[in-house]
Length: 178
Ligand code: NI
Image (cartoon, rainbow, N blue to C red; front, side):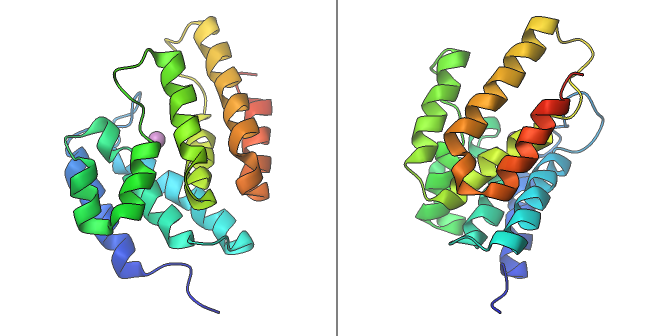
């Protein structure tokens, strides 16, 4: 069996993300931001080990880098120079357009993700699985409800890319804010 991914590439992507995110923390915790991206990557790896979808390494690398274009000063060009155009296109699709209002930004990102290989869809499913831990205490009930509804939209739009991630996201939605 071929390996799921190249560990040297994994480490290079993790180091790129750690450097790019710098002192950023996981919201609501004191933890370094790379804890979030490695958690998303773990979701990807657990499903990929079972399902072995095409271009699995792209999912692994995009998971580690998924917030670098949206949340740091790294650009598509920086990511492309280090990991190739395919990875950079995936990370760009996973990034919200800051020029759009919030609800539209998610719909726009989902549309762009659907033009990407399924390997990229899986990263968005994994990201929302991780983000459906308990909502921050300061969130109003309407915000919690909206976040849950948005997760249903993501599951419907992208779930076919990975039965394992889809099922896991569905069960997280079920338990969210209960
Ligand atoms: Ni994320």
